[in-house]
Image 1 (cartoon, rainbow, N blue to C red):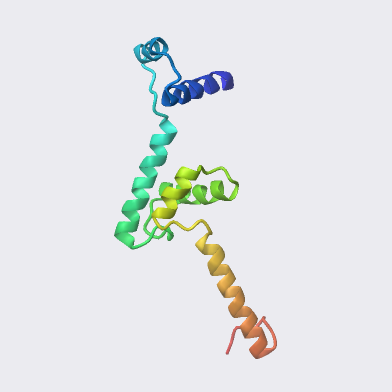
Image 2 (tube, rainbow, N blue to C red; image 1 turned 30 degrees about the vertical axis):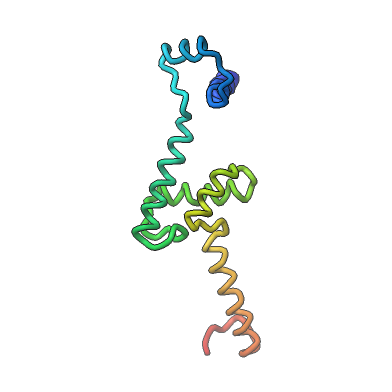
Length: 131
């Protein structure tokens, strides 16, 4: 349930802040509760994959050579950042890695648009790409 999910998230938060009593911490551990968030671990795993991709391909902004899963993760980081939903900590880690939050496709589109305008100025229209 949503309510239980919130409670679980709060227990992790309280534990991280040191605000969860030893008794409750022990009860949760005995129940098999994991205090680290699976989402956090998954994010860190993808971040490590991104760093490996950068080491192998020279940057972390091109999705060429990335797995589909990592490419989706990269796109999601850009989306979350645009929406203001990416934490400052994660934003900083990505910036330190050389990650660019603007989409390379958007930049490529804008570059081609500028070329089209130059073509129009030189040839009088933007329907013919000859010349």
